[in-house]
Image (cartoon, rainbow, N blue to C red):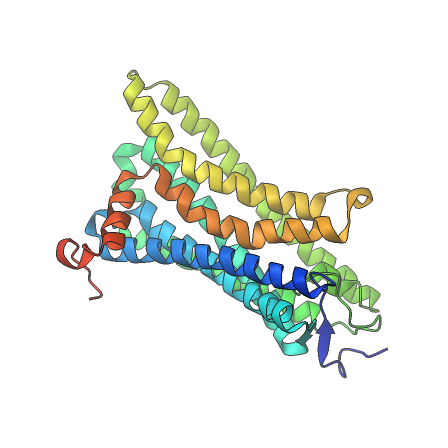
Length: 317
């Protein structure tokens, strides 16, 4: 069996064993990825060019769209290439790059979702301090911290995983490179335990962010229920629902994918869950956020109809 020093490629899981089904997967992946690229691209353009969207909430939404685009571009092109050409290989360095970028973008996205929850908490529970707590410098520092945390986490996991000796072959049971499947090929007990320790530390950090989100929304809902007018309560809830929907979609797909019982695990179920959190979630996020944001919908409408050059003062034009 090859070890990590001589291994040059990994074998990925084939999406289907028939050419017709492989072609169907190619067109399906192409449609979802184009929808994600179009939706997140429009969000980026609208937030960057419309002065009305230069708010902390939309600033973090811009960064969230960048992470969604990164998730799509990390795995989908290779999967489409393999489906179209009937191959199942990925180079050793390409696999390492996939692992690093996936952890980087997913870690950054969850940090941004936590920060966006804090933004909603301050806006509703401490509106008089909103400008102070979420000024332009504070927002820039929080966004930089989110990206730095994702980078450091990805670097630690990737460096440790790809330093392990691999002696159980090179076949991965997934259509993209994923740490749990790479660990199954390892023959180093100490390295395996070290990576499990890193995963446990990351899980504790994510759980802490999850508890913060839950606590923040409890405070938000208590504050909203104290608003005397029904219109005011509806408006406050409307600003929170998109974020809550995105967080629920993001966490539910990840939890089901990685915490499901082994007894119900199967290649088809793993494939479906992977497509959900890798592709469907980034494609739906722009739609969810634009659904109840009237200013964002107006900016997107101007971009789509070609009126942005006349009515939007774009700092990058």
